[in-house]
Structure formats: C-alpha cells, structure tokens
Image (cartoon, rainbow, N blue to C red; front, side, top):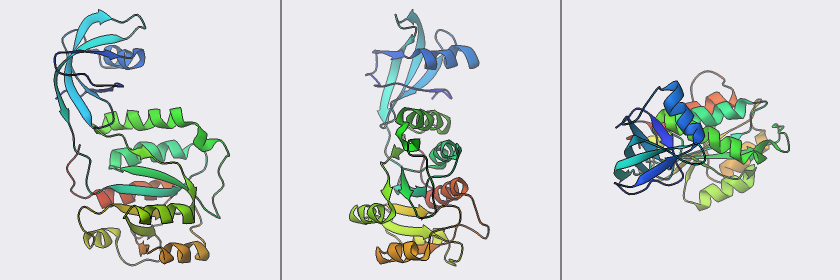
Amino acid sequence: MSSLWLHVDEVPEAGSWAEISRDEARHAFGARRLGTGDAITLFDGRGTFAEARLAEERTVRGGIVAVVIWRREAPRLEPEVTIAFAVPKGDRLSTLLDLATQAGASRLVPIECARSVVDADKLDRGERWQRILAESAKVAKRAWIPELVPGGALGAIAESERARGAALAVAHTAATAPIASWSARIPAAQPRTVFIGPEGGFEDGELRALEAFGATAVSLGPCVMRVETAAIAAAVLLRGEATPA
C-alpha cells in the first residue's frame, strides 16, 4: 500500500477511474513529486480504501485521475473511544482534533462546562474542522475519519452517552485509578467515553452529576495537562493495542 493517502468523496470499484481534487493533486504532484504511474492510496473516511495509480488525464476542474487497482473495507477500531471535551481557548481546538485523530479517537464531542468560555461561532466552522480531521486521518492512515458530534451541555451529553451503552469515565487529577485499569475491567466491545474538563477542572457539582450517570473518576497520570493534551493522552491510553484501520 502506498505511503501517500488522498481523500476522495467516493472510492470506486477496482478498474474504475477516480477523480482527485485540485488540492489533493497539488499535494501529490508538488510536495511529494509523484508522477504518472505512481501508486497512491485513496480513502473516503467511511472505511473504504483502495490502491490506485496516477494517470495522465486531468479533469476540467484541475484535478487528476487515478485508476483503482483494488478496493477494500476496513473495520472500525475497537473499542470505540469517545472523547467528550471542554473546548479549549484560541486555536487549540484544531490541535486537539488533529492529534486526537492520530491517537485513535473514534468520536469527539465538545461539552459546555461552567468554567469553559467558548466563542459563539467557534463550533460553527464545520468545514474547517472536517478538513483538519481528514488531513490528520491521512497522516495516521486511518480509513475512518473520527465523528465530530454536535456538542451540548455536560449533563445532556453524559445522558446521551450512557443511553448509547458507553462506559463513562471522567479525568480527574485527584483520582487514583489509572484510566487503563478502568478500561481493562470493561467488556472489550463496550464503547468508552471519557470526559475532559476545562482548565481549572470541573466544578464539584459537575463531578457529582457525572458520577450520578455512572462515571468513574480516572487518572491520566501524575501531571496536570491542558485540555488538548489530556484528550490526546486519554485516546492513547484507551486505544491500547488495537489494530489500526
């Protein structure tokens, strides 16, 4: 399989032609200096990926054409790992989305907390966030792009996650149980959701509310972390030895 992954809307059947957008083409022919006949990997972010070879043809929109050699379906990573996070300040959300994707998060859910302050339009820039997720999935060679779930109030998200059958945990500096130990006690196929609070942590009332929904307080390590760092650490520790896909 080629080391260069390119995202496409649909991955066609073997023997068919795939159109690669101008932006993806610029990366292939510019930064990577690929040419006609070179192998690439195409993926749609929904589990389908394929090996293809670049062709000479160009599209009327400035893209390039590749012929698909073979196509496969990749299973989702198990267990399903959801990171429910307080949105960090500034542009650190892009860092969180980028690195949590590389760390193997399955779902990403922003939560509203008492101590978090978020610009009203921050999560409305869906196209930008989806582009970040797709770019990171290419780096990680993941056939599945993580789902960015519409966020909401902490209690509503906790209730929704429990209704999905997920085991809940809340990262807390005072916890003594390592998150990996907590995960090891859960059935292998059961989804895991870990809540990451804002800088300053969850308020006591929020912690009690999460505990009422069955969340277990867990430790990510001995040091206090920023939101995006904690999210990445949680994804890595929960992912464990899962097979990449």
